[in-house]
Length: 600
Image (cartoon, rainbow, N blue to C red; front, side, top):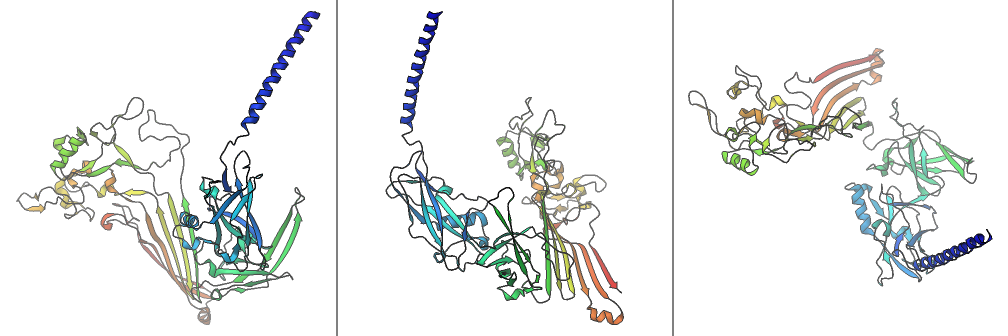
C-alpha cells in the first residue's frame, strides 16, 4: 500500500509540472498576440445620429451675453493606443447638410435645416489632438446664441478630413465621420409641456380641439415661444403665429405676438407657478413642473370677419391571413399565409393588338403558339387583343411549367392590381364670413386600380340576336365606342352593299365582334383607381339678430345643401361614366335640399 501511494504522488507531480509548462506557453503566446493591433485605427465622432431626422440633437444652455462651450468627442478605434499624438483635421461640411435636407424634406424648403452661421459659434482650432496615451480628443465649440430665432432648425455640420500625412484614417462609414449637430438652446422654461387640458376652437363655438403636448422654444433667458393654437413645427407659415411667453418674477406671464396681423389678445392675466419634488426611487433626482394658465384669442391672416376650420381624417386599411383552409393542391392564385384577404384583380397581360395577318403570323412563330384563347391560328383575326403566354401546365410538385404555347385564362393570368384602394381621406371644410357660412365635405381614395365594367366592353343581350356583331346599331354602348376609335379591318356593308362602318386599322380599341377574346379581364382595360369627390356642400345665411328680433324671432337661418355634387378625377375613357355611379344600374342621384331654421 505504501509503494502504491508513493507511485500515485509521483504521477500527480508530473501532471502538475506539464500543466504549468503549457499554461506558461499559452500565456506567453497571448501576450505576444495582443501586443499587435487587431483592428484599424479609424477616427470618428461620438455623435450618434437620429436616423428618423438625420441629425444629432445637442442641448446648449442659453446665455444672452456669454459663451457656452460644447465639447465634441473625436475618438480613435482599435485594440491598442496609437502610441503617438495624432492631429485630426476637422472641417465644416455644407454638402452633406444639403444632401440630408433633400433626402428628408425634398421640395419642402421651408423645413430644411439651416447651417448655423459663424455669428452664433466659434471654433478656435479645427484640429483636434488625440494624445499618444489616450483614444479621445475634444473639439471645443463656443456657442453664442443670443438673438437666435428657433422658428428655423439650426445645424452645425462637421466632417473629418483625410490626413495629409496618412497618420490616421477617417472611419469609412459616413455617419461615423460626420457630425450634424442640431443646436437646441434651453433655459429654465423651455421643453415639452403637457397640454391635455388646453382647448382650441372658434369664438362662440362649442367644438374644441386638443393636443397632448406642445414644445416651448427659447427666446431669451426668461422667455419661450409656442405656436398659436394647434400650429405645429411643420406648418409653412408657422413663424407668423409665434406667441412669446415671458415669465416674470411675480408669477405673471407677459404674452406677445411679433406679428400684429394675427391680432393676438390675452383675455385674462396669465400666470405661472413652479412645483419641485424629489423622486421617490431616485433621491438625487428633482422633478420640476411649470404650470401656465392663460386664455387668448387671435385671427388668421385672412380678413377681419372671416373664420375657417379644416378637419382632415386619413386612413390606411390592411389585413393579413394567418389561418384558413388552404387550397390543396395550391394554384398560382391560392392564398398563402401572410397574404391579404383582398387579392386584387387577376386577368390577362395585354401586349398589343393584332392589326393584320402578318402580326398574327409573327406572334405565333415567335412564341411557338399552338392555341390562342381556345382558337387555332386560322381562327385568330385582326382586331383581337394580344395576350402574353405566362406559364404552362401545373406540375406535380405544385410549380408551373415554362410557357407552353397555349394562351388561356386558366394558366396565364397575372395579378393586375394588388388590392383595392388602401388609402382614404375625408376633409371637412367650414368657413364663415359675417352671416354667410360654407360647409363642404371631400372624400378621396387612392393606391389601387379599377377596370372598365364588363357591360361596357362587350355587346350585351341586345336586339333579336343576342351578342351578334350585326346588333351593334341596336346596342346601347358607351360613348367611346365609335367608328373613329374602334378597329375595323375591312369596310362593313349591309345587304344592299352600303358601307355601314368604314375600315379603320388605326383604331385605339379592339373590335367588338371578338368579345370572347377582347372582353376578358386584362391590363388593356385597367384604369387608375384614384377617386376624389365633393360629397356635400352647404351654403347658409343667418339674418342678423338685430333685424329678426324686430319681429319677435330669436334667429333665422336659410340653407341649401347639395349632395353627390362633383367628381374631380374621372379615369374612364370619354368620361362615359361618373365614378360615383355604377354602369348599367340606376344612377346615383345628385340631391339638393333647401331649409329654413327659425328660433323663437
